[in-house]
Length: 370
Image 1 (cartoon, rainbow, N blue to C red):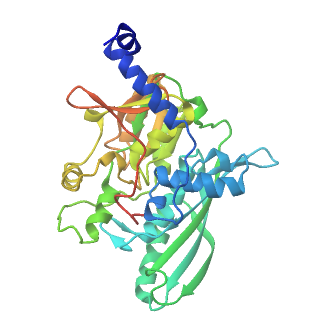
Image 2 (cartoon, rainbow, N blue to C red; image 1 turned 180 degrees about the vertical axis):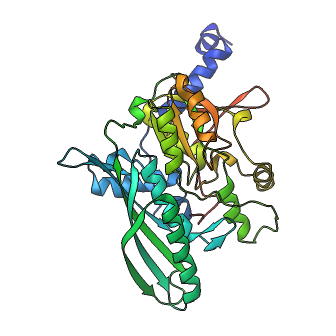
Image 3 (cartoon, rainbow, N blue to C red; image 1 turned 90 degrees about the vertical axis):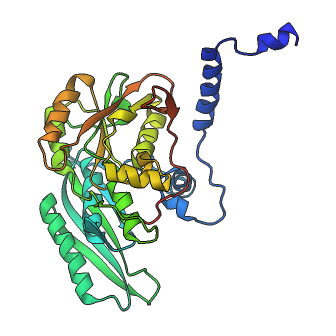
């Protein structure tokens, strides 16, 4: 081997690692590309395929400054100077009822939570129902009652809506679409642009319950586990956190794609690194056991009552204390930190002392979970 060939190679492990990370970074900065000619279930999973579909079809067609933020809600200024958050979502979960909740609970909680993590205080919701012919009125009443109870618990009102009925076999029982409006208090600002190296990554509680509860409720896997969905409104938790940690930078609820995908979205838009600590991740033993049996990483499993917040390190202790003092926040934890490098990367420090890259979700291991 010639000396020139030897000289062309990185001479140390650090240099080799640096070259690999540079290649990864270059690849990750590319805009998502929609390669499929038909829509697949993966396009609804909240990961790479979803991002490609949204970017290539919807953002490309509807492009405007508010939409391009791709937040959980659009933040809209009013002539009075006040700001509104406006969000919409659709719910197609199967089965319609599962341990811990129903499609009715999800339809309220999902939109309330999108508003809350955008910094808003949720006020009003609309609800539209697509109901399959033959659906039992008694079951419809139960789901609507779940929505009523969830709305009351979250302190919001359902003020308008619509109902459509389609032929038997055309709607899988029922689909629900909700839209919500909330008011953002003066001076409150949450944005990935505010995130800084040294900030802490906070999760409001244990992760992975919702996705696994729905998956096991389908009865297709012959796995029995005492797992209930975490579906719940997070607006009280958000208010408690923001009062205790007023310099909180950014928040997102970790629904489709889970904590791993949410952290990747932050890393990509901020250009910073998110370094998670495996030993700090709060995961119930039964959820972890079910994930292990199915070969699914709990970092990618959906939650419906948990959120991720980026908090200055000086305020993270107060944030955790505040969350743990609220219902649903007892298992809140600091699970990582933000660093300047490697840019745009999410990594996990493993329990064995090593580390691995946590990429955005690819495919859809848990379809139709919300």
